[in-house]
Length: 245
Image (cartoon, rainbow, N blue to C red):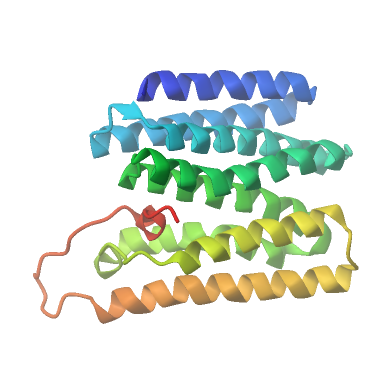
């Protein structure tokens, strides 16, 4: 297996190669590289905290997906600057969504599933959804950003409220909802349906996402410590997706 530092360094190099092949402008380069650096630093720190010395096969698939997400973020910046990038952005997004189905299977078949890999998987999901929601929001309205920011709002709340830091039980529905967000946002980007139908699908996706996070919040509230001072087993906010399906 690949050491964490070498794996993250390869991810950074991969982002540079991807950006060079996309032939984007300075602003897009800045966005793509910034995303890659944040990814590498956050993943490295989390690996150190979890005592992870090497990346498993599924982790490498997830990092490949995260690399593509950094390139997609750069393309979104290019699009917001007035360039037409849909023809390139869509294939990259499709590959990223397909890889989201692969890493879990690889983890199970190789027996390398881990809490760290689950967190990495969840963060890659959340980031891709955020990037796509920014692109779609530029066309259909700022409310679409709700699809991208709700995960991060949950993470902030979990840091501020001790009762939300208890590890959540595994639930396959979370992964289904996350995949739904990506597919619906991609359909909106493609503009293969009318704007009205796209808005309806996005509203449904947003309701499903709110229901999923709301259920987790309710579970945490019901299982909060009964007495002040009772110890709480802390968990990283991304533990809502620790289990790869």
